[in-house]
Length: 273
Image 1 (cartoon, rainbow, N blue to C red):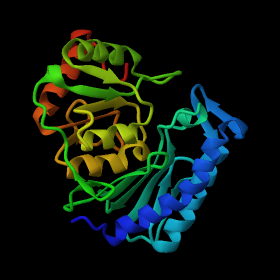
Image 2 (cartoon, rainbow, N blue to C red; image 1 turned 180 degrees about the vertical axis):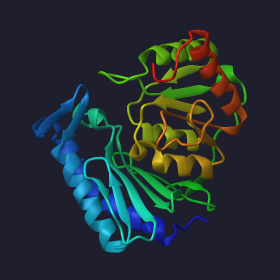
Image 3 (cartoon, rainbow, N blue to C red; image 1 turned 60 degrees about the horizontal axis):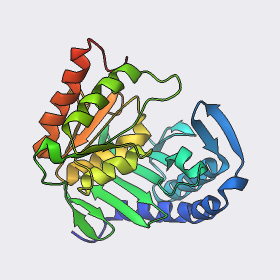
């Protein structure tokens, strides 16, 4: 299937409409109005404007859907059990610093199950998308997770806890182990794109703790439809409401998960420490 479904088209159209102003804002990043929510956690006028456009466009296309949004919180739908999960700018700090690595992320959830998602990177015009049972795509090209099966050849991505977020000690343990055993670790600053890159075979795996549902919802669908595996680092499957996420190709998933958990256990830590 190289032609997007109606659901994907709705998300795509909303993201592209919102991104037009977003790209202009990025070009004038020094003039953006910025307020500070916490250490390293910024919200901009661009965030709010992008989310507003997404909300309006998606509500118009699917009036019965509910919403879960980073800035606007939860909005009830008509009781049908369908809702959008939205991150208007994943990679806000990159955006504010003029680093062209950020994305709009939208997922569709039905009765608690993630059924479709898109991750749109507007600077490079890369649209990663997937719907359950239909495969994963980058623009109109089918994508698959990588076939690498040797840890020494694996390139991983991660996110570093900052400010007063928990998990710094366990992260340091996991990072030490990953640096010793893999081809390298990247910290790109946008979890949705890290997961999209796993789906496209650019990374073999990605892990992070203390994320929010809107950071990973679309990526979960896309990685799975690309043939990858997604869980919490400890193997549980409550990623949207748990403490961590691990995405990897099938050949390396078990090895990466064991490597990370062994590193935490050897230092007698918990993932939240």
